[in-house]
Image 1 (spheres, one colour):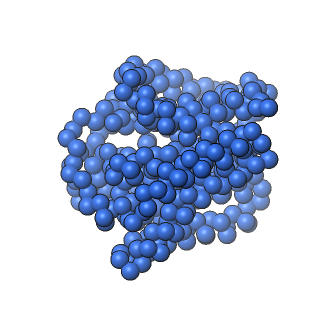
Image 2: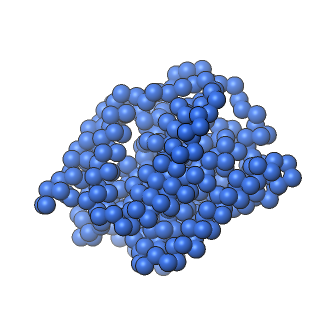
Image 3: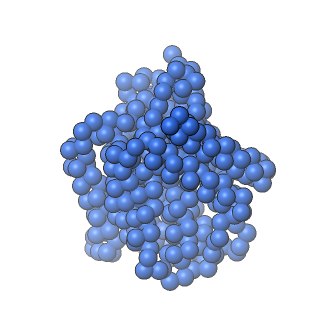
Length: 255
Length: 103
């Protein structure tokens, strides 16, 4: 018999998968705050570190689902992805170690800043380049930084990695999104290993989230053309701002 | 297509040289990994003691893909093969180091 808690985590994964497909922003930005908000309602407290650990498995699922779809459409620059993935894996491992040792207040604060930045970008629209350009020399350190953020916060690539690939590596935006999704799979493997070793990964909850993400991403691709993205963008931005404030209140309000 | 809510309206760029960029990945690998993952994770949700199997599987797929590329590209594109090997080496290093992390 599936428990209500399991159904709830599958629901979180579904939401992350659908929003990821429609808005390009649906990994840890959805999973981490949703777990922090929903699980206590079922009598299960969860720290931000545990939520980030589960989110790493959600990111793996996003990577698998996205890579399957994007490879079929010929959008993934797999060669570039493999050449850059050692940097994101290195950064991801460092970020994950930081996630284990930093106090929850610090992680929550960085996460809240990320949520506010994501809301801002969602409303304003990211700067993007369509034409192919020469890559900057700063791409390796920037990808390492993207890896650190992914390891520390359980996020995929939409917020940091895609702008790096597009604006600094000179890869057109559609291929940047696809390549970022492809890279995040390998990065999340390393991140998940670190969190699992740190004892923060609940495999049962992670399986529920990952299943939801796989199904949600597939369904979201079909819903993409039917849902008015502009309105969803506004509602989701407000939700991100509310979540950031709530996260700060949870970790700093009692201090 | 959407990224962070902004619709991309520019002209699609010319397709990249597929043979170089697809890195020799077999077209069935990720779709097969996806569907096997759905089944294994569903089993893990129904029988929580088996949750580790599905979670492990979705981590194994990108690793298998990297191994495939590292082996098949060795003679054709040594730099790509070495990059895939470096990515795998990074994961092996993480795997070794994680054993020293107190849980």
